[in-house]
Length: 232
Image 1 (cartoon, one colour):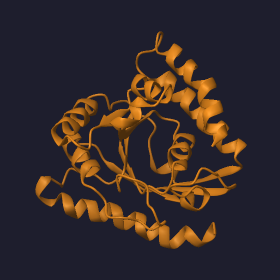
Image 2: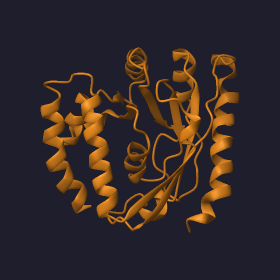
Image 3: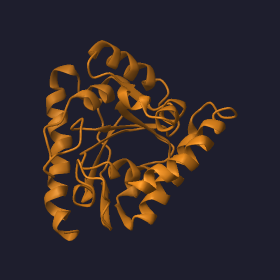
């Protein structure tokens, strides 16, 4: 993971400096995409993207995906050119440079130990999701320990219903094999990102949110079963 620290030391200060002239966080996101691209290239990781034509760059969405590895964020940033606000653990803000860049990029921090504060942070961020700026949730809430998909939490589903934004299921494949949880060594290889068609949330509410959650998770599970063997 030496490359991660090296490129963070280079791109991180640029992100912080750019916040002086651009307070929207969009310049930082563009620099973040460069950071992600550099890390992927230098570690021999390729990203195969399927379904980009399913999204409109001018529209805002709530993306919900599985979570296999730390590489997921890099691959997603590489795949999506339109600004994305990742939902992340507030504790990451304590990391030098990286944490400050997250804050200046206006990503969405949540405190898992304080549900009310987490809801307030998410609701506040919902107002900023316009003109192609979207939110990104990792459905499982944390990285898988064994490569298998875990149950999904309701956070992203409830957020999309309240924000009245469509959900786009995103499937991330092979990240676990290249960088499993607990490992510091990135293996070279290919990841695949599948972007499905948007699902309208207009017919859903708090009472039937579980139905929507299982629909989103079911699409991702099907993709994992269909495409996983292509990259192994």
